[in-house]
Image 1 (tube, rainbow, N blue to C red):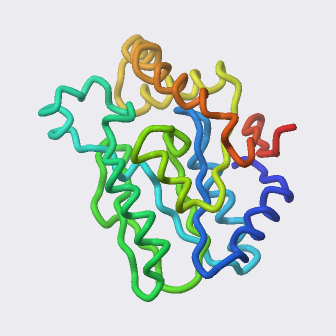
Image 2: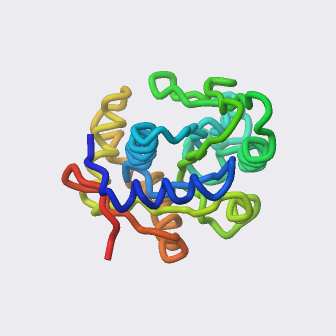
Amino acid sequence: MPSLDTAIADRAAALAARADRVILGIVGEPGAGKSTLALDVMDALRARGIPVAWLPMDGFHLGDRTLAELGLLERKGAIETFDGWGYLAALRRALAEPSHPVYVPGFERTLEQPIAADRVIPPGRALIVTEGNYLLDDTAPWSLVRDVAAEIWYADVPSDVRRSRLVERHVAFGKARADAEDWVASVDEPNARRIRARRAFADLVISVDDGEATPSA
């Protein structure tokens, strides 16, 4: 598990102190380690007694049946293969409805499918951490995420490390290595270029590599 720099944990704690409900977004290219960084941030805040919750963007993947009907199954992971408006609505609910549980979908990698009501934002105070690929995109509805997120951080990793992780992930979940390499080149990399083009708009860039997560210079 990567080691989280104290300055990052301090910054997240300061965000949590702003209000009863605060959303922190973590964005990055496929394979950058967004989920690991999100979990590390939440663990660091729990250790300080700060309540946290997780709302992953991956839960808003369109299911394979819908993707097939739309002719998008071979582009799974591209921006148009997510329910962006549903994701935005869930973020708004999580921020505005602290008096009761808000159930949100998760994503099961062994099935490669979203799972309804798989996670819960409990009532009360919380820093809600959300992570995904397109939180900084400038097209609607993604551009509206800025209206609800206090900050959006960018998980940065060398491209060769990221691509290697992606190939190994695809192989682990059933693709032949040649197919995994082709998928990374033809699907994941175009998505990565789109995400990377918005890197400069992040509130904080975090280097996630070699077992460390540190603010970039």
